[in-house]
Image (spheres, rainbow, N blue to C red):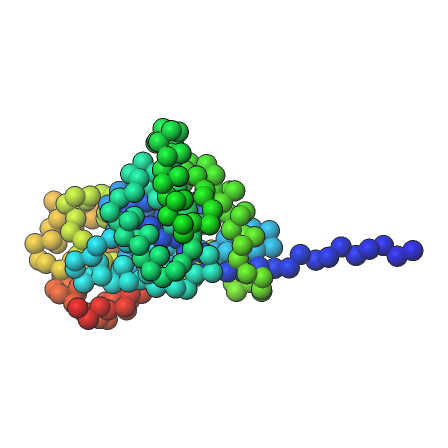
Length: 306
């Protein structure tokens, strides 16, 4: 009598897009879901400028997470490009998840997103983040008010910062992406080249170190990447500012600020890459780069014409 051969579980693979208002915790959640630092995080709103793609494996499922810029009412060209990128992510999603800061509740930006989803006739998972910062009674009332909107398929309550509820969320999403072959190697965590991730690490350190002093009109580009025979990597990056009077802010007295930023970025890059890193930062003025379509293309954004 022959033994029954167990049925092999089919593989799954699909895109899960994370949307939300600025500072809802999307990037922190993305890093928790993947188990690695992929998206930069800072207290400043609008830190994420373009869509960030990261990959997680859960059982037989490969989940391709897309972290989008925060959705708000844009006024400047760069802001419009960021918001457009976020809504583009909605169109491309197999599964859509709206992250809301439970402590802030239903803000004007959240209302704007819900209205946009209704117009697009899109359904989404509701992920309430930072639940450790809100009283249970208030949280339950918020859940009821949001589910009454009629666009949410399921509700997850999490703390992206400490990881509470994240494993359950990832396991649920793994069963919801479509059946199909994996699109990436099992050990790949991100789609962006390492030189791009390195530039984002430095931009994060600029935000963290300068905070309110830092103008938003700043970007970082990796100009040179040299892998040396001793296993170390030499990286040259340029911090571009849009005005000459911004340059001294980034440099600091006697170059002290940029040296500190470089040390912070180098430490994280060495941890990420597992090798010694020689990081050299240069600060240059690039006037009106916010009106240059080529710069937007380098950031992975579509250039808004108005």
